[in-house]
Length: 268
Image (cartoon, rainbow, N blue to C red; front, side, top):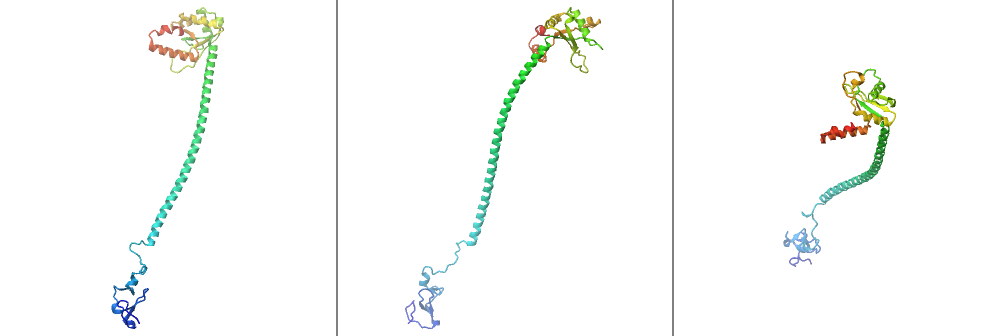
């Protein structure tokens, strides 16, 4: 005999007078005893209160799987891009590192070459200095028998050798000691400066005698038989090095002493 679960009373078997719980108890209730509050989803209160009796329904707080996947995809895309950039950065670092190694190797090679060139330059400087000294010695040797005459007037078609013989006679020098005489240098345009005459003598002793006679006053008028009283000066035929040294010394003395003429008389 069927009984109503709520009031434990017998109920009719007619379907329109009873309701059967579709829960696990499958109990029968009189329709009058069933309300919406006590009979949810065709289940009694006891079955409704059982664990797992509620149908799974999406919660408002539960995130949607599609949204989660989309968010994960975005994050994965960011990670992928970052990984790609890191890979490119690593390649760039490797490239820069290789270039740096090449640069350091080139710098080391360059330093070695520079050191070698410095040593070679020092050697060449020493050689050049030795050559200059040797050239000076040769020039000194070449000029030790020569004297230089400055201020000698130049005439057209002049015979320098004959003029020097005349000068030697005026100075009472042995003209047989004269080996050669010529004007040296190049004439500069728009200038009246006379080119010097270099006289080569046969012996050094003869040259010394010419140098000793330079204190004697000798003019162009005495040689050419004119009224030209321009003096002819006799001096050593100096090398380029000594000539430059003499000029520097004279310039320095002009600045520091008023007795230049006396001090430089023996070098003039």
